[in-house]
Image (spheres, rainbow, N blue to C red):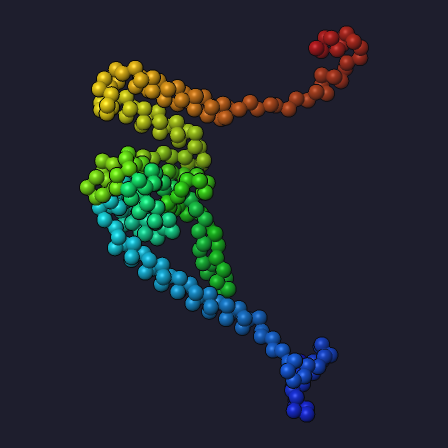
Length: 271
């Protein structure tokens, strides 16, 4: 409840609540909280629109770069993760690590390209809140990763290079290998064990061409290598079972055993 009036060329503010006077250049205007909120919402909305515009331009630039090499990766991912090729393409061109794909294709480039497909907390607008706030909700997402910064709780899809040659549309199917393993609920040991025992070892044992080793599976070094892989998988399986079947110590009521102990002979008997 303030009254404003002119006094000697200065503007004074009298407040019945504050009991203070502010004159001339020292006058401060305090905006209502609702006005500030509305202004911040407008600015935030404009910023979001500008970011969305920039993201759209970036996506279209990346889409124009997609060729036969990218199509090979996209088709493998779509088949393995049960997504459409269009969904995979949109995910890839929207990923902030898109440049890793080009580094993987280049001469002597990255040896591996890793994708995770798992629940990720995503911001969703909260329609019930007028201030534009958001909720974090888990949602399945496919994304590129270096494999060392995010927790692994879902499915891993990976591409491995077999040489240092530049990857082209004509040699991508020969130079790049694709694989997956499932670690749903964080069961990494179980996922790795399944991948090695059910996929890699059978593939190795059926391999006919071992390069310079003409004897193939009859060669002693090849036999030793396969034996070592088998042994590793068995050890992995043993570790996994030990973790899953860890000893559970049951709490025992000691009082029922010591309640009636009166003399040394009772202790000996109890022992």
